Amino acid sequence: MDVLLSFAAALVSLRLAGLLLKSGRFAWAAGLLTFAAAAASMAWGSAHGWDGTVFRLYYLAGALLSAPLLGIGSLQLSGRRWAGPLGLLYSGLAIGIAAAMPVHGAFSSAQVPHAQDHVDVLPRVVAIAGSSLGALAVVLVAAATLRRRPLGNALLVAAVAAAGIASALTQTAVAAAAACFAIAAALLYAGATRRS
Image (cartoon, rainbow, N blue to C red; front, side, top):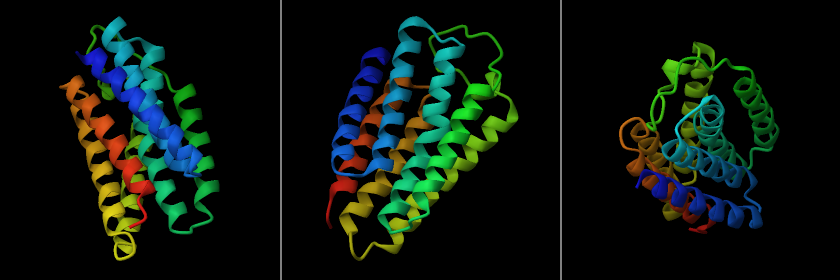
C-alpha cells in the first residue's frame, strides 16, 4: 500500500506541476516537482529498500527544496522581483549541499530513514531553516493579501499545512504521508490558480 499511494502522490504532483508550469507559476511548479520526486523516492524505497542514492534524492526534494520553492512562488505572486534570483541561488545551494553531503549509516528497511541517522548537522540545519522560511513566506504573503484572494490564500496555507503533516508522517506512516503529499499538491494547485 505504501508503494501505491506514494506512486499515486508522485503522479498527482507531477500532473499538477505541469499545469502550473503552463500557467506561468514556475516556482510553485518546481515545488510540486519536488513533491513528486520526494513521493517517488518514498515509493522506490518502500518497494526496493532505501540506499544512499534514493535517500539523497528524497532529502534534496523533500527536505531541502519543496517548502522554500513554495515560499519563492508566494513572494513572486506578491510582486517581489528579487524572489526569482533568490530562488535560483537557494536551489543551487541546496543541490550543492545534497550532492556533497556525506550519507552514512546502514539502510536496513523499507521505512523512510531518519535524517539524523544518515546526514550531518549542516544539511539538516539548512533544511530546517529553508523549510521554515519557505512556509513562513507562504503564510505571510497569504495574510497580507487575504482581502484580495481569501479563498485562494486559505487553500495555499492549507497546502503548506498538509505538506508539513506529510513530512511529519514520513517517519511513521508512509501511506498517510503520501496521501497528505497528494492533498497538499491539489490544495496548492487550487490556491495558485484561484482568482479570489
